[in-house]
Image 1 (cartoon, rainbow, N blue to C red):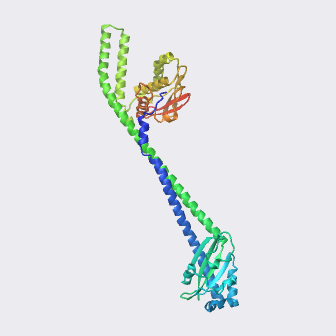
Image 2: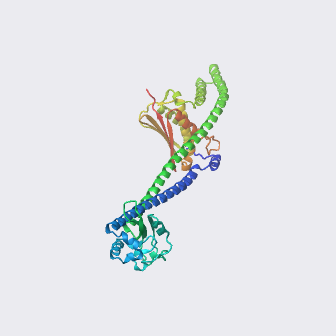
Length: 460
């Protein structure tokens, strides 16, 4: 078959083009990744904050309810003496022994420790504590962090040991009663390592991150798919535009050449007719000359109209007869070059849609390409059979084949490696078949190249 190379201008053109798809892939990946990570951080922080606040509010309501039920409100006003009352100490001792509670402190409104699970802190003011100051103003304060075992930054954290995991510290405002309005009487601090809450926060955070990353990946892949499709369509439209421009140029050249050919053809035919009448040559020779002239004239006239729509094509062609004539024409050439040409017809073939001269040109062009692509001893097989509403023709050769990267260019105008070729053979074949409502497919590997042509069966 006709082995073709892209023209030198093609790679240069591609190199100069803006790599839209590559840039979009990189930029969109970075953008989606940044947005997904930012969204995951915000959502994880929001979920954690809401769960901690809900947990803290439940703890505050629990403590406030027990304060009201046990009637220990009056002890908050006794200052550091409150811790010496058995009822007060017993109440908060139960709170300190709750699961996950590492330490409990009770503060008066002046910041004095009224009671603590660490007796050494009772009666002391523990220094500057922003969280405590905010809680003394009625704010529910929640702090969460990782237990690292480093030197504590707050006095109330001393002697806690080095538990693993994350701690939650709640500063719970306590009021005279749960029914508003009521005066604040103190603050209860619970320093906990809530295993259940930490596990829930970890699973919630993991879910948020997984959802954000999966959503970002889906968004990236779907957007990239659309852009790939748009890029492919743009490339196809660009290639089609280039091809149409090339074929338009070929059409103009063909029209110019046709006008120049027709006058000599008319002179040749007239000369053959005159020689036949004068008896200067055998009638058969003159008749053959006139038939060839008429065939060339018909071919030129037909090729000048190949840009018309398929609806403009009329008539039908006998594929079997066309292939047989092509074999008769090419067999002497194949034999002279030490090559073989085989014709295989699978049963009777119906006529196909299109003009016979166009089908002949398609067949001749494919066989000629196969002839040039093969070496002495190689074989070219031309076959045809019916496939449903179409007739499938195939021209297969045992030549070296076409490299996979060149297959995409073989149907482009002016792409050829022939020293004297224009690279229009396969381009015109495809254009002709499209006009006839057919198609062509080229498959190639070392030792076998197949040109598969499909033509619709003629109606009626």
